[in-house]
Length: 439
Ligand SMILES: *[C@@H]1O[C@H](CO)[C@@H](O)[C@H](O)[C@H]1NC(C)=O
Ligand SMILES: *[C@@H]1O[C@H](CO)[C@@H](O)[C@H](O)[C@H]1NC(C)=O
Ligand SMILES: *[C@@H]1O[C@H](CO)[C@@H](O)[C@H](O)[C@H]1NC(C)=O
Ligand SMILES: *[C@@H]1O[C@H](CO)[C@@H](O)[C@H](O)[C@H]1NC(C)=O
Ligand SMILES: *[C@@H]1O[C@H](CO)[C@@H](O)[C@H](O)[C@H]1NC(C)=O
Ligand SMILES: *[C@@H]1O[C@H](CO)[C@@H](O)[C@H](O)[C@H]1NC(C)=O
Ligand SMILES: [Fe+2]
Image (cartoon, rainbow, N blue to C red; front, top):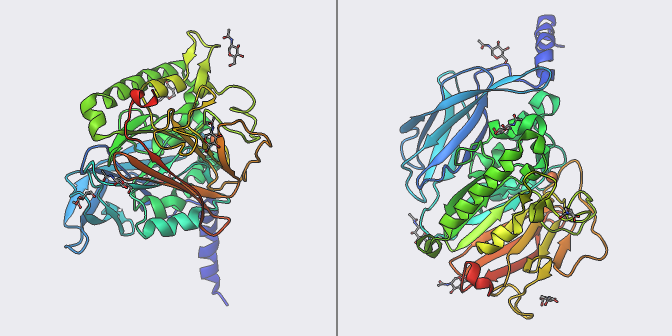
């Protein structure tokens, strides 16, 4: 039998536990990594509920533990829910990391330290062949692919993860406790490899404040749009949501468009494109899709693809921009399905050739991968897709991508429903990159 006084202590703690907040307010949690963009860098981000210092202690695997240390800052994030919950988001940027070396670290302060984690500093050579896991629409409830992703990430199968929007369902819910819980849930992945993100519609609450505050992507846009390089790829992350939530600032749509144009112009300078020939974009809502989600692609022409004419001035879409600058691969999510498209532009298929459509394709290759698992389940497909639809699956799962070298890029789809079976794969082969590759 539990002694009475112990039971009382237990009962008096109960409300705290029920609220889901840790009784040690200075204890770090929700640890995750992101690439800061410069060779040899990595950002460590975490949360505490009281203000503490922000320190990372780290060292080479096999060397003396915590030999080095780095300091950063914490920002106060006040959620906009009724309770106005407060938390401190800590960010420390590690620099001067040795390419491809393994590091052991923990983070926190003398008032509380995290568990110990490891990561591999990214190899900054353009001949490196990075491996990615990519998916969108992973929730706190029914996160079906999570276990497989946890194990594969910890086994070292990926150099980075791309989460293409829609987190937690939704981070703001229950006064942002769902956000906390989701960030704890992905720590088993995101504390080991850079977890690179873009915003989706499920992040829109309070002007995307949970998303903007909790992640630490490169650039100065609060993680809304940015680009980075890895291996022979230039990767651009963007917000498709600027086309839908005009109430948060129509100027964001135009700002992003200008930024995208400048970034693409820069990436296409011959000396840059020669080193990073692959330009890959990731954004949440696709330009094309053939499922019954009903909100875009199928019901009306995608704003992301063609822009909007009900704004002043009219808002340009992204299909022409990406085509003009020779974007090779476009990664999307939002539809809770997997769909691969034949090379497509302007609603028309431009195969490299009938026999080998992805060898020197004459238009960008689109992949939609939004079936990682969330409370909304998967979507159903329309029975008669347009001719650009090449392969479709409603299994839960995620995609893998390897940018092998300047000419070869590999993509495959994993079905979690079928215990990790690879249900689709392609090689995109390009002897030439840039606009002239289409001609
Ligand atoms: C620590 O955080 C808790 C929860 O946010 C808050 O109630 C408490 O006032 C904070 N204490 C200090 C000293 O800041
Ligand atoms: C980085 O990758 C390249 C290409 O695979 C390899 O040659 C090089 O040795 C790697 N760098 C390190 C430090 O391992
Ligand atoms: C929403 O957030 C963005 C990014 O911080 C900001 O530029 C914009 O002004 C905000 N909009 C509103 C209505 O506060
Ligand atoms: C405006 O866009 C809608 C669909 O996005 C289209 O149906 C309509 O024809 C366009 N109007 C003009 C004047 O371009
Ligand atoms: C593109 O290639 C695929 C695979 O060979 C083929 O099924 C499809 O009909 C082709 N589409 C066009 C428009 O040529
Ligand atoms: C690029 O990778 C492909 C696939 O592994 C290989 O066949 C090809 O020879 C490689 N090209 C170069 C230049 O190494
Ligand atoms: Fe979505």
